[in-house]
Image (cartoon, rainbow, N blue to C red):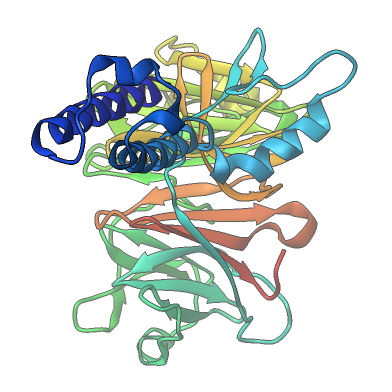
Length: 416
């Protein structure tokens, strides 16, 4: 609205200055202040023409301004319509920009979207048996590298998503059970041993100890390798493996899906779909201050997740929401962006205290996943590995890749 008032004042001044300028220069007519209170059909012809022109300029700029003020939610129209279908009943009406106001959190529409370009594609299963990858895909040398039964790699170029059969030939000299990206190098598990794809394009034995077993890597830096497990309503655990002393520290995280390192520590995002859903963010300033796995007595293990055995009190809660799920967090252009699932819609948001601010409608869909993992690579590319129990149990059935301002959802076998 401020922009609208600005344009009104601007056009008024422009018209006034233009009219008085004409009255000074034109020999065909003169204008005095009484002209502004006379009927328009009594004004001199030249003055009427200029007023007519100014009127159309004003209408155009006002239209642009109002469009700018009130149509800024065009990208959100489908999303808002779905929310209204689910939320508006009796006397309750969605009053934009507020979608929902609650005790735990608020859902608010941003003034404008991030304007990501979204697209969806399907990767065919190389074996034509509709199975899903053995382990979560990784990005290696600008390629998406996936592992399928009977232990062979399938590679797609990140640039155009075409198959990279040359890289596949180099990788498929052995059969593997699982794979990861460690120190920007491709690492595979074969017959209980770890192998590294070296700079000469050959597999060599990897002597470094890895703590994952057959679990995806959640996070990595020079000091730690992080991973997690999930036991549903019985909780989950996030583990920080110290590369230097080979100690593993743990705490409760039900269930961790992404870690962002900040100058204050590690922000661990978790979510759970049981009931109506929940999501929480914890700050772990120093993982070595968590409980040490070697001090844990395995005989005391029960149905609850190991994470509940951490009595350090070190993690600090940033937020803890119920009735909403948050599948992912990542850094983008200096902002922390979250992938939020609420009321059967999944969208991108910022979170400021208890305000969940929708910044992009994503695919305007009910996209859902159970135990996803998000990895942000050094080149800025973001990869989300998505599972879905109803299709592939704990295996990857889809991926989301964010590169620059383009978001691509990739489904295995067929669109789902």
